[in-house]
Amino acid sequence: MSMQIATPRQWEWLAAIPLLAGLYALASHQGFLWWLLAGVPGTLVLGSAVALLLMPGDPRSTAYMSLASVIGLVLSVPLILADGFGAALVAALLFAGSFLVAGRAGLRNEPVYEGAADLHLDVRMDAKAALDEAVLGYFLISASVPSGELAQRMCDDAVKLEALLDSNGWQQDPQSFHKDPPPPERVQVVRQRRFGVDYERVTFDSGFTLPPELPGAQTWMGYENNNRCSANMLRHPGAPRPWLMCIHGYRMGEPWTDFGLFSPGYLHHHLGLNVLMPTLPLHGSRKIGLRTGDHFLDGDLLDLLYAESQALWDLRRWLHWLRTLEERPAIGVYGISLGGYNASLLSTYAEGLDFVVAGIPIVDLAGGLWRFVPAMHQRYLSWRGLDQQRYYDILRVVSPLRLPCKVEAKHRHIVAAIGDRIVAPRNPVLLSQHWDVPVTWYQGSHLSIRDQREPRQVLEEAMSRAGWRSSAYATV
Image (tube, rainbow, N blue to C red; front, side, top):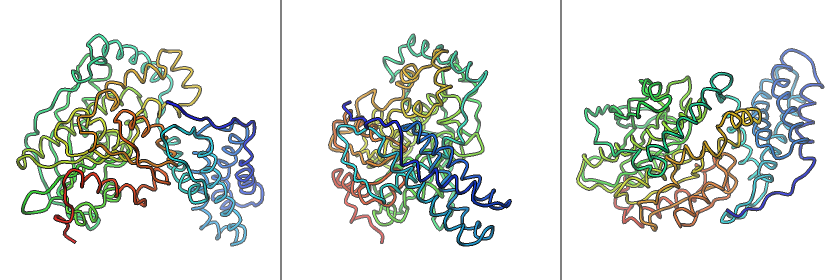
């Protein structure tokens, strides 16, 4: 893939603003409340500013800077009680400046890929990108990174896993690894109401299994919560309507997050669609950690192969179930972020989809994760045999770029953010090349997708090309 790399700089002078913010937070005042409310985020801002100044281009420095700046801005409100309005206002303004610097520095250091739209840099774009950086900082600072004996065992398992994938022919023929599941049995449907939305909660046993000889397979199969598929469903009474399967992103899978991303008011009422929102493995009611999504993209890196394999199995079972409800239903798939990955992967296995829309999709999980693995861990993992190439080869079995898409080209759609700091624009460009369709870009970031008009335009265009007449279904 052709790309243009930013000209290297010995110093990043944008770091002057967060340096000043950190120093002001640490050195200008005293008192316990000031140190607690300004000193803690100021310390992280100062440290990330030094890293940005001396080591420009490290994506972790801008992520941590933005996260600390957001914390500082939030805490500046109670800071008024600690040291008065004037001092708190100065701290808030400096933290706000640091927030914008994080966004601008991150955007400026990102490679420009052939096939991506031109980026329009302004303060609004800086703020959108900085919000991405803050969320990325939260992901990084709270991630479980394998260390010690766990890292050693993971490396040994990676070598064994790749050998098994190769010897069984699964790397060469991923379809032989992913069996087509049967329709689910003993499906339970319970009516619920949350956040003003009436919906049905659908559950059934996943039925997913792994070859027992794979390292960690027995541990994976022992996650009881994860073995129960669940989805939120909104369907209209009366005559059949098209179904839209909406696949959520990382650390989502809860009603409050999924209804915020896939608006019932817009999709179910305005467009008049039946909507199915499956919960991905390890998310929502299927979580195995304290938070939704724990161990999907952190912890043991090899678990990602099993998580995506089960996601593909479960999503295909959901399609089979929809087809038991009515004869030849119209089904489209819309995935966002990690959901865009799974929508793209599903489209290489599922027959008969009316369309697929991949929103801000990541498609190279190995490259996306490896980018943020600490340097010490990278050196150790590579020395023990688990380098980025081996990890990429292992994940090829669940890559949406491995097999051709089964959806007709005119019914494949990609919408992406040119200022995305969580899913680098390289990812939708790779998918565009694989699918041989253009990307619809918007001037925004990963998190601004809810507020952009392009995603809705792309979805409605997909419906139109598929022959879904939204005006015939709308209820409001």
